[in-house]
Amino acid sequence: MPTLPKFDIDDLKRRMQAAQATLKHELGGLRTGRASASLLDPIQVEAYGQRMPINQVATISVPEPRALSVSVWDKSMVHAVDKAIRDSNLGLSPTVEGAILRIRIPELNEQRRKEMVKIAHKYAEDSRVAVRHVRRDGFDALKLLLKNHAIAEDDEKRHETEVQKVTDQAIAEIDGLLGAKEKEIMQV
Image 1 (tube, helix red, strand yellow):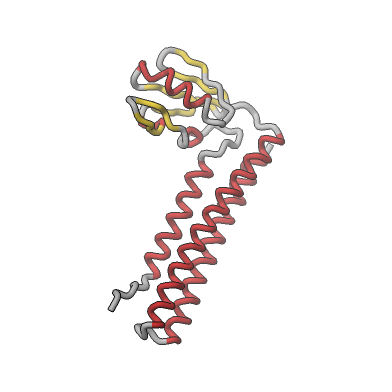
Image 2 (image 1 turned 120 degrees about the horizontal axis):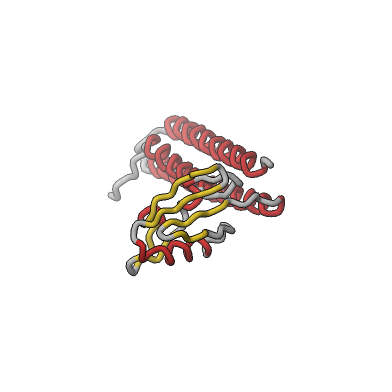
């Protein structure tokens, strides 16, 4: 007899929270017009024959509200970090001063703000889809348990309600994160 899946609501919650954490990370990388060290998090630098996150080759600081400072640890990597920032599609142009790159954060125009909101919506939808996949996995496990008479029908219905409730909470949190980011982006 095949081994039956185990139904664990805490595991489903953990997987849904992982989708939310991914969304928080992705939204943190979206530019809002204010300088933030997390703005450069998605950037990968070609370093030592491999791609690495920028924070593994440099220290990022925020000396002013509209500026970033990137202090590259290995002077030979300055050009690679500069190129990675320019190619990142964030619309940033660093100024190189020795081993330090200074980045002015330009004001976002209305069109660019709308593009950023669209990107935020895409990230949120990806996160919602991930949460729904976790919900489906939970429902599938319950159906299999019921089919193999490992749980009663009442228990299956109760657990399905529980899974749906957890899913609704996760989706509401995702919508809340998106709403906050959208408001932050659109502030002039």
